[in-house]
Length: 303
Image (cartoon, rainbow, N blue to C red; front, side, top):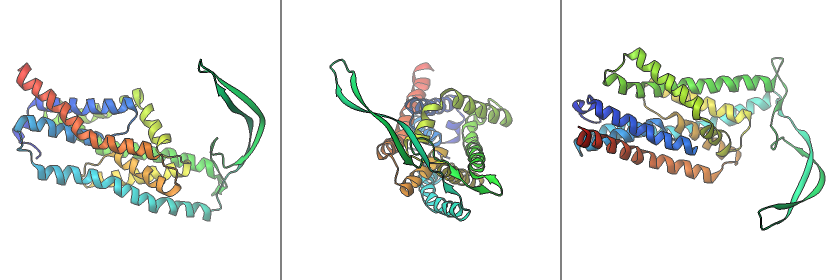
């Protein structure tokens, strides 16, 4: 509904949209910034659509079916996290599960001066004894849940919640990308879904580390329980949106849940959050420029 059906059925239009979105996501992935594939596809559709039909793009469809879910889903994730995490925390305390404390023993060294060649002179201050919540090591929980070690139970559920997020992303993102193949009549529905899912998995295996580090460590400092809460919120909202056919961004929802945790634990990295939001704002125009450029080359130069 965004552009006329005759344009959508043009293979060059679909290739331009796919390349525009892919280039945008590639750039973000290599810089470690989490952006939305859905947002990239939307921008690419707009860019190629403008080259194809000018200003005859259906803006009503663009706002109602694409922008509204993309804008509201992160806000919903923030609000839901503000409700879910305090509730789960009260449940933990009610079950008698406490944060495990420890004594950390290690040497400290203070910088004395920096030399012209870049070397730093250090002065040893001896062995330091620190009583902490393992913030510099790893924060774990002590206690039992139905006779099982609470930390082990949390680790298992944390792993399952991560799987739920992956399932939710496949449920919402795969059909959007596979639609390009279906419209072009290149593959059947089953093969299209399989190839897109395989490509997503391979891409994650090859170059997911930078974005994963940003999501897991740079946005906020969080423990196992907080990470589990963020996964629950993300999986629930994306699966709910998929049920109603709304194209949301798993990345936006996941970041929204982390932003919500940052409001709760006061450990958010404001500079990283600003970078991510700026990248979200730039995603659509960058994808539009790429897709428009490709479609122009295909239709006006190569053909």
